[in-house]
Image (tube, helix red, strand yellow):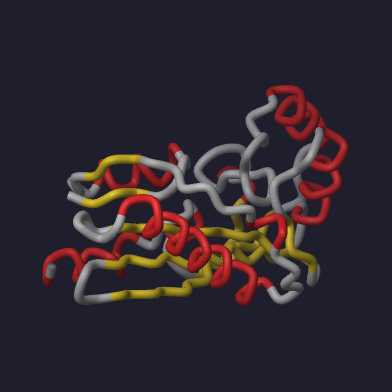
Length: 183
């Protein structure tokens, strides 16, 4: 059993799919206050900041797991869209581009700390204009790093993948499993 310090439904689904027992308890950490301009630095500091908040709230009697994910395209960090216009801008940067999804996760017990920073790169075909408009109107982009989900809207546009899909979904479970087996 572990505490998932995240409100992400996708991260919860990944843990469930791998048979990992957990309790989901989002921890308060203002990642928007981070002034990091390098994507890998941003996700690292966000994941570690979330871990510190979770540890302060829950202690380490139960192992803790936190994570953060960012999307980059054309040299820009693409965070969660603020509104539909921002989502459109972010998605247009990804259309026909190479997109990197970077996830940092922190797993901590009383005796061990495991930190993993992974990158999965996608090459997307240009997004169909009608599909893009329909997706924007659906609101499914809300709360998603890069306003997109590789298992959702972006999936039919994937031309090439380098890395693990779980990383792109926000939790590189394949790298976590050995640590859970040792615990």
